[in-house]
Image (cartoon, rainbow, N blue to C red; front, side):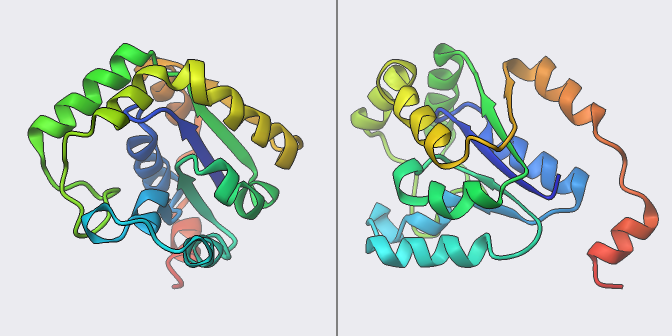
Length: 180
């Protein structure tokens, strides 16, 4: 596993899992929200965003979290070794998003110049994700990357078990990945 795509609802734990996988496997982590959003939550030009993603996944190894199915699946999925779907219950996702809003702390996955803000549309997106959005993302996944193995993880226990199942990196693997 050298190129992993993580999908799921807002608040499902995509960024947290990406950081954990990146640390465990010694892989760079790509947060698509950081590549997409401009300061003050402004949207970039579509080709500008695709160019950023293309560059971010050009390497031989990465963990990339975020959906952006219609915009980026053709760039990411053909190169991926594994797709992880986080099947986190919507109440958990919704609660995490609200807590994130209330804490308003810096996060490594949030774009520079974008402060947490209450957006009813985003809360609605999180609440209705499985009903209104997931099917379309899954259809794009099947169209663009049907050959890529897909692992579904539901909840902290399954995520922990998956992480614990991964081999510890050997010292020589770490030195090779660090360019030593």
